[in-house]
Amino acid sequence: MQIEKVGVVGCGLMGAGIAEICAKSGYETVVREVNDELLTKGLDRIGRSLDKAVCKGKLEENKKEEALGKLTGTTNLEDLADCDLVVEAIIESLEHKCELYAALDGIVKKSGVFASNTSSLTITEMAMATKRTERFLGLHFFNPVPIMKLVEVVRTIMTDDQVFEETKEFIRSLGKEPVSCQDNSGFIVNRLLVPYLLDAIRGLEEGIGTVEDIDKAMQLGCGYPMGPLTLLDFVGLDTTYYIANIMFEEYREKRFAPPPLLKQMVLAGRLGRKSGRGFYDYSNS
Ligand code: 3HC
Image (tube, rainbow, N blue to C red):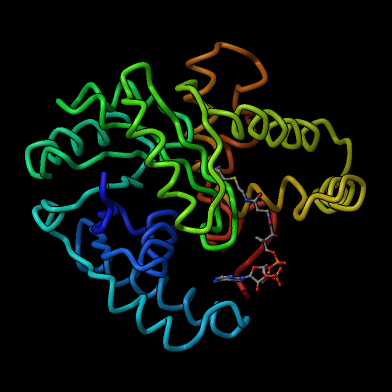
């Protein structure tokens, strides 16, 4: 499996980060969004992140230009036809993902490998929407993608051993560290992280502390880079709500059940940083 060209479907928070690190690592990268407006927004996000990397001394100016030269945006799925690897990072909806994979299966060359950046859906279900079940796996990146070192590489019972090992090599070539996971909802990180985040909301509901005190307690008491409520705003409350519902549906365990306050905040449009308000107010930042 020779990876030279990577396709990324979805140029939101995660897709933009994945496309950025692939292009930065020298892979020809095509990123696809559903319309021009979202594509422009996603490409701008990549541009800003590369500028920040230059400002922080993490990337030389000429390397930024090289990365941009490797990157193409498109709204056309057909432009992914000759990709060796396609990473999908669209909304956490099984229906949308399966529909996309069925279409991609008819477009992308047979040797191409498909990988989903899902954080909680079952990879097997998506693989079954295609005829390349042995060339299908999960690649779960973490936000912010250019900074976080980990990628969960998820195999199903159908994933080919060689495809799995070579994909881990590809992840190392991006400067990331892979961990191997089985196809269990939430894999390793969200299986542990989601109950913790939901418990912080339950704690807030029960009045164990204020938003600021809960965050300060975990940040200073445990050395976490962000408190749980800040992290929830960072990840997005809607995203967390989707993930919690999927995991609750899968495991039927109370620890994965979304607390009422989370649902109310999502319904009220308080989605965290991206909407300007979550547990904190970002309207001036
Ligand atoms: N490109 C490359 N490097 C960059 C960069 C960029 N665009 N922006 C910043 N950096 C570098 C900085 O130079 C710095 O490097 P250094 O430590 O070597 O000096 C480092 O990245 C940190 O940058 P900053 O100093 O600007 O940022 P902070 O120190 O404030 O840290 C943070 C920001 C990394 C977001 C930190 O708060 C953190 O780790 N938070 C927790 C994030 C987390 O838990 N993410 C996982 C979420 S869960 C998830 O994604 C799964 C999903 O399924 C829910």
